[in-house]
Length: 101
Image (cartoon, rainbow, N blue to C red; front, side, top):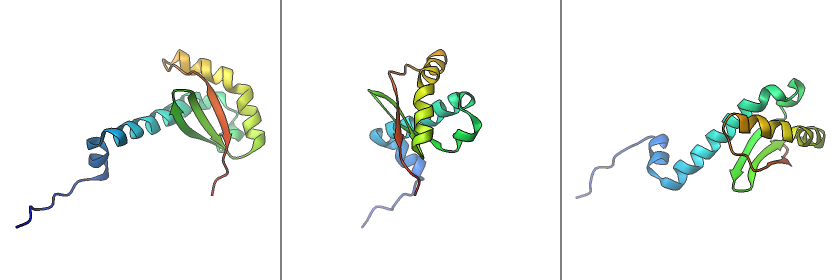
């Protein structure tokens, strides 16, 4: 006889898996970081920027085009300081161009 199958939500599955829980926390933190610095980014640029991965080398922001990337690289020291003021230890901010599909 088979044991009855138990169902659970995706959130429960992620929480029960160490690696997935860590990945979920990093995704959430990346979005929180972007929300924290968004007021420092010119309004017309905001739609072109998405939160990217966080790793031991820093935080990555994904942008739609090279013009937004150049401006964001110029703003990076200001954004980094704002994040530090809010308690995040940001080693570096990387900017990568990644067009939306």
